[in-house]
Image (cartoon, rainbow, N blue to C red; front, side, top):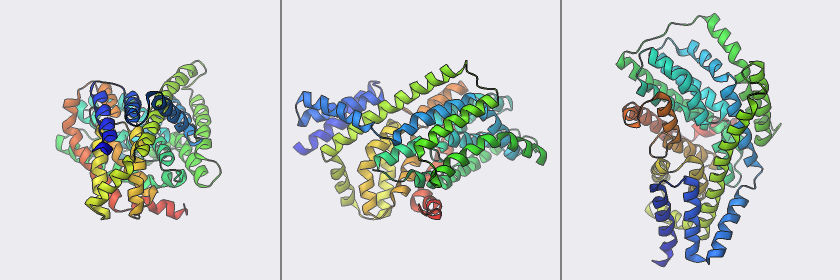
Length: 432
């Protein structure tokens, strides 16, 4: 029984702290200290946890995160979202649920360029939300579409979460992870579009007018400089011209110049953009530091090995183990933000799946796609709260249209889980 005391202390203290409203980062750090107090003296416990937080942030790869956060803020303020929406409108505006489909495509493009679900949800919700309501769409349906589609950009590169997974996994190739995210991300977006189209048809929402080839070409040319960023960033990483960290710095410079070219960003507005980026970066880095300390504490207490033995004791069949891991992560995603979940659970589950012959790149996509669903669920779903707040509605009212979209995301998740070619084909094509 004594060997289970650290696990009990860790789990119970973390759940209790979350339930009384303690911020996630502080809950993780405090529960890590309390767990260490079971094994070593108080001063050593505090020193070790604080030390592990500092060491956890000492990584060159993590420098990419503040740069991608800043480039996301620059895109949000730089008029890029408007141009991406205008381009998406010419492509799918005349289909059933046209505005919902525009939201999904726009969120995929915006999320993949900005690498942030929050930035995507804010941009799409503020621009398309009022337009959807004006065209007769319900606020709740518009919010549900915006919430779910905004998370897809975390799978489609460049993605901060995939960089975090690379760190947690001990150095899985970021270029391979980025390429592996394309097909699963696009597949999830297609599933969401099918559901949104059926829902819109059932509710008899208005259908927009068909765009001419000239309009498609004009909006594409207008959006092309924004889309070019994807080619520069991902192409440069895959070709080995620069690292993910260097690519993130190039993304900042490119988006700043683009925002100034569009005359949406000026020197007067830059301090506010920088301040907003600093706040977001500080939150993310505190989460990463605290999560790295908990990950070390769990390793010190042999918790990953115990969980691995327990899972493999139930079954050694690949299909069963992946099903159990997916169910655990879906549950974890309800209560924990994505970044700490990746940092804490990657060291637990990765040794299990690699023992079963599953590629770490494939597992990274499974994990991130799975935890994207958690961003849309209460009580911790950050994107859920942003989407609901922008739509000026309540979580209770949004749940009904959210459920079929959740189901679409879960179907996509299980397809990606059990058909590794969906993740591994592109990295294999580039010998990564």
